[in-house]
Length: 229
Image 1 (cartoon, rainbow, N blue to C red):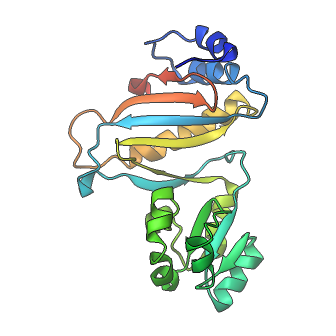
Image 2: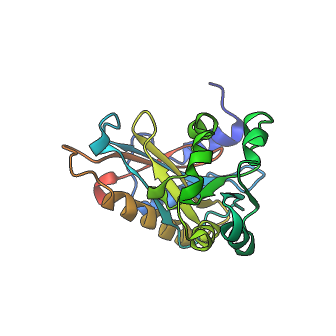
């Protein structure tokens, strides 16, 4: 794969195969984020879990102390008083059955997170095929199926992110923007790692965090030493 000049220059600063400590890795990722826009800083964690076993699944959510730097658009499925509450709390879109054809037939996806009250999950379930693959399906473990829609909206706006294993047992999550300070990125990164360490499945044998890589949207990956996390 042919890489751009900026990428090649940035990659020269990173020793391949080297495992950096957290602070050094964050400094390198910030330095190598040279695109003309404010790049997202992401963490990719390869775990020793086997997600095909229910007792080795990982899924949860955590509020990053400094947020993600991204404005998140929230869609809430709720009715009556709960719909009014969601609007008052600052949800971008609120609706019920009326939204099904808009999403299913018109391919409307102008939202980043979906919250639903438990009584609406029958309706939302009909969208499983379209929301599921995009990782947008509300889930009680992530706090997005709840009667407390105000808290759910406030948490998401404060920087709550969801983490889960993908098909290859890797977790991919944003921890901020290249414009964040190293301290802010370090706080966010540590908060995420603490949550993932806490979520370690009891059934897992062997190494849990196999590799941890920090990367910016356009930059090269920097490997963090998982033994120090």
